[in-house]
Amino acid sequence: MIGMGGHMRLMSLLGTLLVSACSVVGIRSGTEEPRFTVIERIGDAEVRQYAPRVAAETIVPGSAEAARGEGFRRLAGYIFGGNDGGARIAMTTPVAQADAGQRIAMTAPVAEAPAGPAGWSIRFFLPADLADPPAPRDARVRIVTVPAETVAVLRFTGIATDSAIATQRTRLMASLGSWTAGGPPMTWFYDPPWTLPPLRRNEVAVPVTRRTGP
Image (cartoon, rainbow, N blue to C red):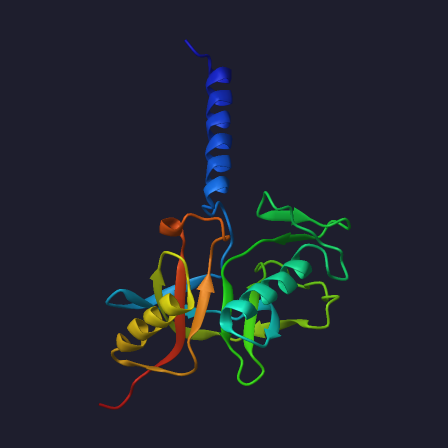
């Protein structure tokens, strides 16, 4: 028989192996994301209310796919220590500790949206408890406050190619019902690129307001 101590060690080992396995296939494990309230479901989509949140943002010209890669690299540089506080996160855990004791958690999603003629806006949302984010060292990265907003969101899996995103955006816009789009659609990415496609969480979202007329 396994004693209580042995049982606890076994459970701890199984938990460690499970987390490690999830990391290998890219399953999110304890990653923070902005809090929201679902206020309505419309078919496969849902309407969410988000409170104001803080993000690191960069504007990148070019195609959506190229801008996504370049934007991710810039923002990852900020998250991994390219800031005045020198805060870092480890690649193997969602939370990092800075040399000066400041903690920055890896959060999801990474947001992509059109930024007009300037290109694409790529954002990392920062942890809710990070009251005073360190300033970026890269002048192309800035800290912004995203105001409270109501958004319609449609989730999908698989590889988020430009054609797949376009298809899902069309589905979302066709399903708004009593809601009216109030801005351009966005794409949110929740998983690292090595995540198995069937396990990936992607979302298309658009700001909405309740339609008042017929």
